[in-house]
Amino acid sequence: MADSAHTLRLATRQSRLALWQTEHVAALLRAAHPDLAIEIVPMTTQGDRIVDRSLAEVGGKGLFIKELELAIEQGRADIAVHSMKDVPSELPPGMSIAAMLPRADPRDAFISKKHASFDALPRGARVGTSSPRRQAQLKHARADLEVLTLRGNVETRLRKLDAGEYDAIILAAAGLTRLGLAERITHYLDFAVSVPAVGQGIIGIECRSSDARSIELVCALNDEHAAACGAAERAFAARLQGNCFSPIAAHAQLDGDALRLQGVVGSLDGSVLYRDSMAGPASDPGRIGIELAERLLAAGADAVLRQGPT
Image 1 (cartoon, rainbow, N blue to C red):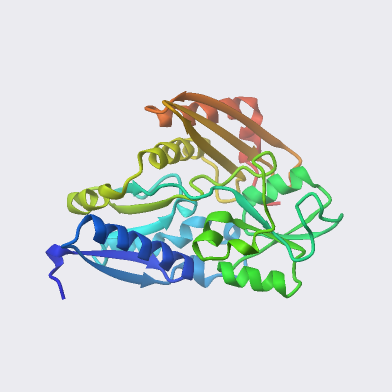
Image 2 (cartoon, rainbow, N blue to C red; image 1 turned 90 degrees about the horizontal axis):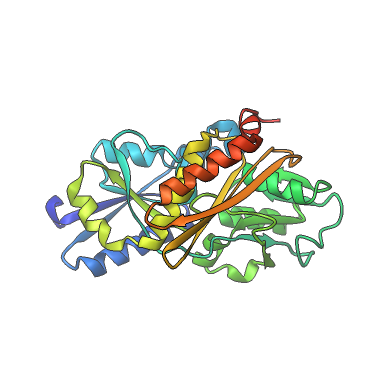
């Protein structure tokens, strides 16, 4: 086995999607650093263990990464591979995102065995999602729908749909595509219906801020476009200071040297939805995110963000 000076240890969740993402990062690292030995450290997180309640009820998406961060802090791993949509906008002290990979399809995917599209769902249809963000936007678009909690890994969620527990479910298109399940997608939700989660479609690599060696190794994988878009979206979420119940969505796109960010804040029942966008220089994505958040707060989104679960 290679000595620790020539080994990089990658902490990951054990779901098939998380392992795919980690193996993908490992392959890219081996290509960038042929002499580097890669060790994958699979772990089960609290978010994986609790599958009978919504994430908002049990502590939010951060439950998927706390154990991985602890492994890094304790020296049992060097880096962690995450879906950036699962990473809270504020990291623990001493931790940083060292690289973001090129973004995959950021859209939400509508999946149904009986209905051709979201608009084709009959009144009262049962739609499964684990996300307050999706719940708010879906209910805003279709107040007649019954939006129900859906937990578990991708395969588990698809099995629940196939068993007839839901008329349709909503999943991230990127995860389905990475698992070779794109054929299950009935259609893609337009951003006018569902703006994606902050960081959706981006794989991020986290490590200790003081770990210069790991940072140098993984920086070879960083995609400047994804990093700029991710920074704008994360600054937007951080400025809003929403909790795990807060339906917050944001998506940034680059157009040459300009970055355009659209953001959404809504109530869980979908009755109130604030939506706006703004553009600015791609060289200053954080400022764009903060200014868009402040614009929504000034419009009244602060009242929505103070609300808890209903």
